[in-house]
Amino acid sequence: MTANSLTAPPARADSRLDPARLEHLTRTIQADIDNGRIPGAVMLVSHRDEVVYEKALGMQNAAAGVPMSIDSIFRIYSMTKPIVSVAVMMLVEEGRLLISQPVSAFLPELGQPKVGIAATDENGRPVLNTVAAQREMTVHDLLRHTSGLTYGIFGESLVKSAYGDAGVERKDVTNAEMIRRLAKVPLAYQPGTVWEYSRSTDVLGALVERISGMDLEAFLQQRILGPLGMKDSGFWVPEDQQHRLAEAFDTDPQTGVAVKLLNVRSKPAFLSGGGGMVSTVHDYLRFVRMLAGHGTLDGVRILSRKTVETMTSDHLGDLPGARATPDFLPGPGYGFGLGFAVRIAAGDAIVPGSVGDYNWSGLAGTYFWIDPTEKLAAIFLMQAPEQRAHYRQLFRNLVYAAL
Image (tube, rainbow, N blue to C red; front, side, top):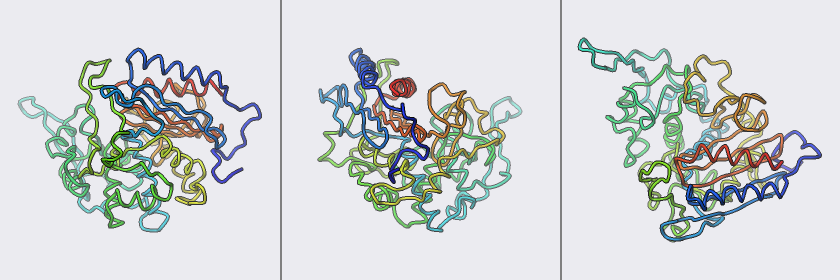
């Protein structure tokens, strides 16, 4: 087994990908592009450490008439989260923090948190009361999204409204300023009780900055992106490479609403650890292969084998309320590790896979997964936010149909 093998268990003798069925994948996605459902996509499948399929279909920029290319650059949004989670675990391996420590040990602004409780006043109007948190959030909570934090931009609640009022969602502030604003609003839940997709990984980005003394972009470049050769990944696209930037349709064909993506044409003030990065399919494959290689790629060690094993194991277990919310994004059959959704059951899930496979995705339509049992990894990149759920499932179904 090579150092960068996509699995620990040996693959079955009959395990291979059928070229004819992969061609069906190409025809299916191309048909949707031809019908105007999405502008284009880049797809890659790696099997037994070899790229067995890669396609660039449709348009990189439909409005400008630029065709898609394998080296097109995409806004990967929340596929930033696994990269930042790896950065945190690198600091853990250096002994600079423990994931059991309270976040306030490094970001004291977030100490002594309050939890928001929705109520009504004497006139029947909604009010937000607070109670003291039963305990502080830990770094572990941030990594597994049980911190009690939320996102102010998805759904409605009094706490989410408070995020807006405090300017937590603003893109023109630094990570340090984001933390100061976040400290002014209550938590949505008691820490450690509920899985809620949230600003947790943005806080991890601020934590990396505070511990390392470097801004998040510089840390990732020095410690992960540079060593792995991810030359087109970062938080913005230099002017001389902006001709490679993939764009969405101006108007979503499904909703008729104007599509607005992150402005990545200049360095942002807010280096969002939860969703601010750009990458290419070959760059992200370098990151994927490092994970699949138990922390090592081409002689470069990012993490230890046991740390990757810890990150890609379920960390929710039987935690009361962890999977109780209707917005549990990993979905049936999955738990959550330290930066990834992790499959914990052969059944229950709506997609094929193997126990122990892990994945994450991005708001604009990017998605990846690693299946160690099958020595399989796949990456799907597009810029079509409203279509993301459909294509995550479709792409996965058709890749496994070829196995």
